Length: 192
Image (cartoon, rainbow, N blue to C red; front, side, top):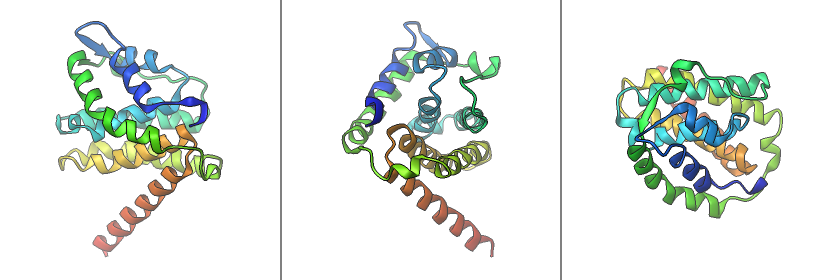
């Protein structure tokens, strides 16, 4: 993987962001790095894929984070800014570690199968398209919370795109693009 990025390593950084009973978003942001946009996009997407997505308002919260991070990526900012209300939000450290442990098995598989492929899909204009899809997905998540676990579908697309950007593995980006086309086609078919 490019720059030797490990998803398991990112999850462990999040798990160890705090030694206290509660972990804040600000602590997680510091652990991942305020100039590390893609990991800060990937982690909330993975949270939406985890059992946490069944907890009321978690998908909305993660959708807001995804929206803010992807918008700042599109604007070309050099570091992430989040409102204090989001930075102060907390989750129990034990729960965070439990979710992290749940996510490590698929993360290990991703770390094994990833390598630089189809790198053109991680460069403009495709990288801009990926960021726009992430932005739209994040904005859509609060509305999807009305139907339990549907936000996990959008979270999967965002996670694939973020992982493709992070690892510079265009195969993941391509799979996400195909998923978006299939979902959009299905939606049009239902509406017609």
